[in-house]
Image (cartoon, rainbow, N blue to C red; front, side, top):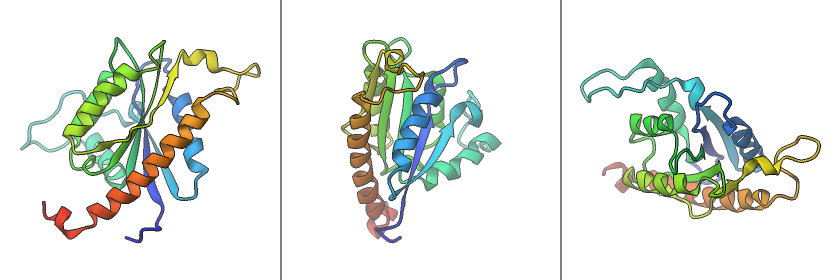
Length: 196
């Protein structure tokens, strides 16, 4: 694979709750990513994926919904997880989605865009960092945190406000994600990695 080939980034909407704000946040971040020529964005909505809540045993066939999402995750060079914070954690459907897969996450970078009350979702991100480390993924250092995200509406109803700090945070996060995605893609193409 040529090192100048576009990087595929899956932006995952982690909330499936009725009335969720996640799609608004994810669409905004995906738009920031699409402005970069080196990135190709796949928006993955877990509400549409409808992954089963009950995991199968190792010798059982995977459900059709799990098989349908697997190629999209496998094709990604990096991930952006968009998550709210519920009770100092992240939504259960997001954990279920993570647990359905293993190889798809390995040796790939994961960035986080979180939103919530005063913490801006950072409690959820702290837990997700630990989980992805176990899956041999690399959590990028920079995050986009949106505390009291409802305050970021502009007078004309657009979101987020033009001068909001999250715009700069998104740029820095995408810089890091792109660097790690390219570096780890090259590493995954190394024969030594493939033989592990």
